[in-house]
Image (cartoon, rainbow, N blue to C red; front, top):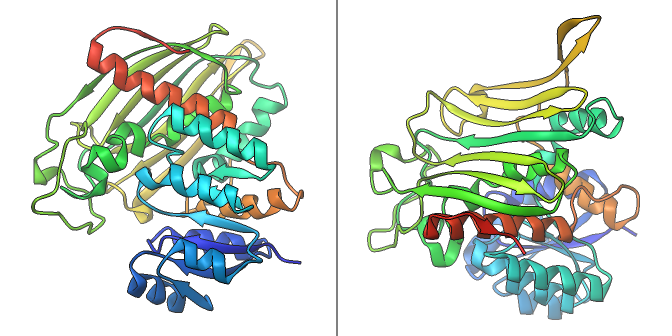
Length: 361
């Protein structure tokens, strides 16, 4: 029997989720959104039979749903995940896992208690470059990664003014929490060590300047809030002795948008990077995947050639969810990793507020 899935949220990411689920043989049975017209339009667009104006109605009508996919503003991830798990559903949830580590921990606990799969769309782990690099890491070619640098930096990348992205109550924060993918990918390569301390600073320059708006046609909300950071820089230490440097920005004086993880291991270093010619536009991107070693007394730089993926792993990540539910693949991420990630993000914001290093407990 195919895994039967309901989509919660009619936004643009639904296209990637649906394509990925179907590629693994999953059945997308319904789309639910509090905007009934949006749910109906999305269902018609993607060839989904049913649409609902509420999640409760979807659960009551489709009692044989196996799983749900959550594509909503960040503040709703925690309650919707808990509701889905309580209704006996496996869950694939958009990033970030939650607004904070406490909520993420509660979600992880609920998944364990119900025995259901809970995964998050850390889609950059599913990019061909990342998968290839992880093979080298797992195969021992890199050794322990001592240090890593994670960056998602934009010059003109604010996703609208006054909408939920810039409203801290709904989003949890700005580019730190929105662009957490490279922090997660670096931790993934480092084998997700236990964090010890965070020292970070956030900056609000340009956050109200519409010259720094991104190209995604997200409408501005005239009376909405814009109370999140524009950029953040930080340093994380781990109980293992490993360290991580991070750079996240929506609006900062960079040459171009860069999405990258670079690391230095005991046997080799490496880099996975995407450079955008125009902020946020996949068609202008350049992808790189390289390994740095010493051979025969000489530095050797290896270019790792993989298929191009404009979707940046989004469909592959959704495909992995279905295969993980069926026991055919290992899940690309776990709830415990999500808790560690959110602890670091909490630490970034806490350190920025206090101006001091923050211990992660």
